[in-house]
Image 1: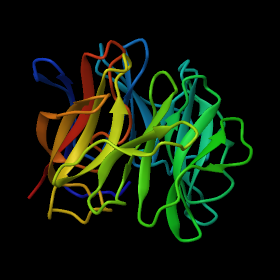
Image 2: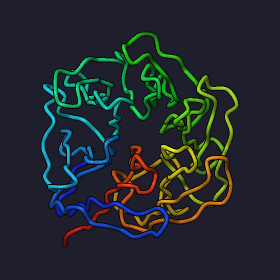
Image 3: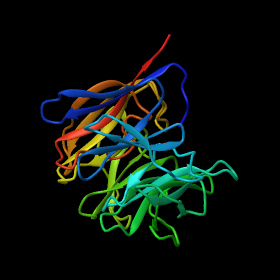
Image 4: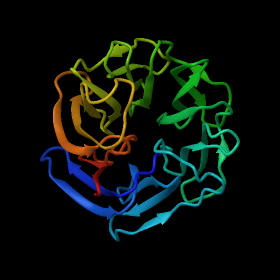
Length: 285
């Protein structure tokens, strides 16, 4: 959620077949991480700690009321029925990220994860469970917790960073990224944490896998090897959005852009699996 002076943000979509890009709006400040609502009419993004909706017909943005939760980062996720929004909000007490849920139309947040830092990434298709990255005892691993709150369950336990957990549309798998083999790579596991399997083997650092609603394709963002540390995903780098079959296999580059952190942190597939929304950036002088 770092603020960058002199940055221009471009809210874009891209057709996954043709590669055609469309610039929806331009902002003279930092916006990040568009979610696409299930009716295909609205994008949800964060900026300056708050959450906004962007009407794709009118091109107008509107802040979503979130009471005290005004230090939200780019880890926001819509509930499967689109009635609620889960966010990672940096709490006033200690500045650490914790997960809260409030109505998508706006409302008072309810705390889900008492412990921090906890960084949200996934909501199970049945609406019952959240998946997130959390630091516990000096190590970042992947956890799940009931969406109504309760006891968290640790799914990974490896040195280094495991991050970006997101459910497949059928709820069978959780996709994530892990630095455990040296570079940051895309992995998947069963929803219970079993069968942890590496899915990319590129000489680059790949983050935030997002499965398309039809379950066929995975989009993720890639940094050049040597451009970043494997466990870091900074802003303002030359990156690629890549696509690969959900069953594994060769990737293809969909978009090359200047971005990184904030570009595609959340699942931003269109409901018909034909487009992706993302943010690209331009630095001022």
